[in-house]
Length: 169
Image (cartoon, rainbow, N blue to C red; front, side):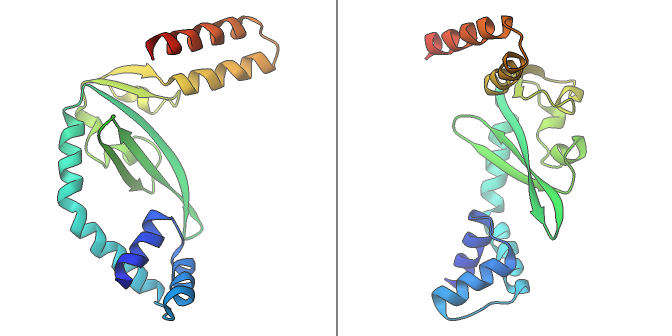
């Protein structure tokens, strides 16, 4: 139970090891070491490895994937959580790298041949086996920036994009 709680707090709630240990002390009266938190996370990873491989297999065969990444602080350095998703499956992978090296580590995008929906980050455009689509949320964000600096055409395009979204829904 303690290992599950440590894994949940550290990996699920993204609490740093020391904060995880502090919460365990507050809740259970036992303060694990940072090493115990790391070991619990590693053990959790080994238990879920078959599910991760199954998810990866489904994503490799998908016709369309959504890709994104976000920075997380780890031991005072920025690391990256890369996300690949479709309506039924999502894979999170971790890397110290943001670019191709980082998202290639998950082993899905290098050979992906479907439609990849992503933001305007140029690293995704280096993938040559797939089709590329831009994420509508990111398009709207870019259009908002154009509106804010005085480009009136961007409002019309924003309205059209939102109307298309509503019609599709």
